[in-house]
Length: 219
Ligand code: GS8
Image 1: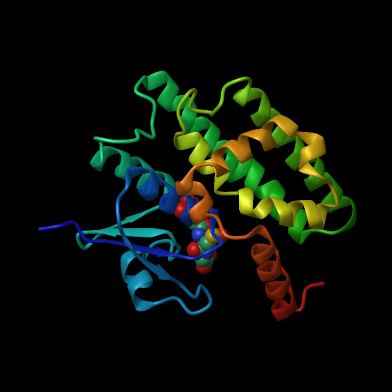
Image 2: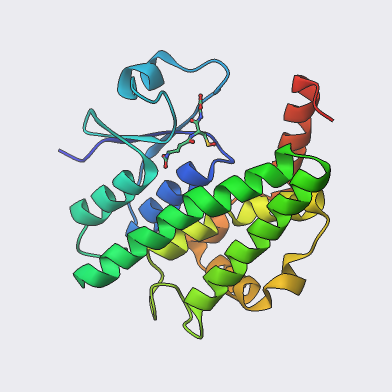
């Protein structure tokens, strides 16, 4: 019997996007369900009762939560194509280090650009740009963070790319001026169908942010 795969997700989520890109890289078909996070479905609450967050991948009726755990599961189940994780244990550990850095330090700084004002926003912008420069140094002259091949670290960072326009607009800066090599890497990743098909239009993401702010009464 064919595998059944259902992804509970929310369209602009970088955490969900990386799972969609990983499944596309592996050439695996799945059913997609977009959640209303202000009114979570019984399915989401049943399958992720601990965190009650997307993404949740339900494989043959069994749920998996937390995007990086899901990515590593996908890589371990569909081993015959497009490896996401490096083989070498040291490189694997390093890949986990950088993805953790992106989802914590960089993500928090990006969120603060959106949420804070005045000096606090300027500080968040400075921190965000520092994170990007550090990541650019880690990328170095390689085509991908994974070396010659697109992998786990690339997947994680590119899932934020549709948010870059929002960070730039709210923070009043241009990423191209701060980290042009990293922007070349974004373009390289966007040439992959798995990425370009999954990532939503950055303007649509920004419109979503503006509508959320309006709904919550935030300027
Ligand atoms: C984060 C998932 C997450 O924050 C992961 O999967 O890597 N560490 C987790 N999901 C958010 C949507 S994206 O901002 C979410 O589901 N939020 C709902 C809530 O907090 O109620």
